[in-house]
Image 1 (cartoon, helix red, strand yellow):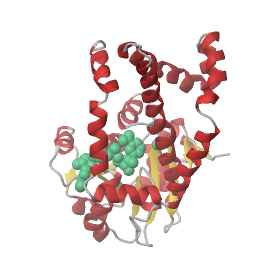
Image 2 (tube, rainbow, N blue to C red):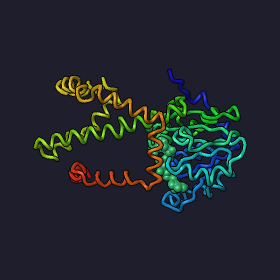
Image 3 (cartoon, protein in one colour):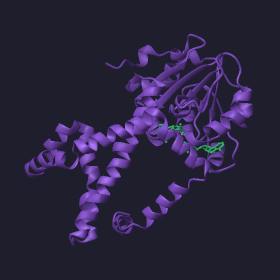
Image 4 (spheres, rainbow, N blue to C red):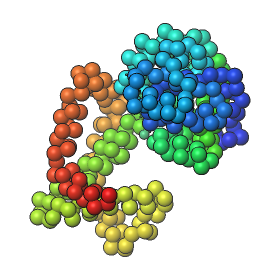
Length: 326
Ligand code: NAD
Ligand code: MG
């Protein structure tokens, strides 16, 4: 059973007199830095690019510095920029300004787990990963409840690394809901597997293939779109609320009988065997090497797949249907 921590297990005083440098003011950076600031923590942003997020930080009246300045002045550094740029920014602007006893915090384990970032031995390395997108992290903070989070310790130089991680989680109000302890290995590998096999990759291909089958059989694409894509959210809302069994309670008996008997025919043990291969590629670092090389090469494959996706029939139809909901 996973260990879960709550408000009583975390102490905000751990952050008293300490300065937190939040690198990045995007989806997570904005939500986490506003939450910590409102929890009374001394927050400075480390921003190098004068982009939209910089303007937003100005408008939010946040304290802003360059990344090297922010890191130098801080006790805790939170790396909240995209995973694929973290190594370059870390090597150039973060690492040279770290000193003994500091804490480096991540919201995802990718760069540490795959050793793209190799921190010095004399600092703490932790993870606080809210289980929700940035907007929700902020909204739920304002309504007083937070979203659950994961915490992990990779390196505990001070002996207090977990206390620091739990204090940050409390500053985000995540401990109100509960914070689950994990490891960098487990978080990284399960996160990549989930987004590839199930959430982003698996679910979108299931939708696309179902759409193609109906359209190729002569049904109207608009009707197919509603059926296989639009309604997915209604079903997933039921699953999230009551689990899979709860979902069956919320649909007709016909849907339940058809789904329970036909689902396993579509997603069968052959699919499961391929999922295991996919997991092995994640565990061995093969996927990470491929993704890093893709990024280095200027993302040729991703660019091509995006272009193909935009032109596909399901997107063309979808743009029309979604207008009906505007
Ligand atoms: P994001 O794309 O929103 O980050 C944007 C910020 O990074 C901006 O402030 C931008 O100026 C800065 N930035 C981008 N490129 C830069 C560069 N080359 N140099 C300096 N600054 C640069 O990132 P995000 O989605 O918030 O992800 C941050 C971390 O949080 C990642 O580790 C991610 O895996 C993790 N995470 C994200 C979510 C989410 O809701 N998006 C959820 C859980 C964990
Ligand atoms: Mg995830």
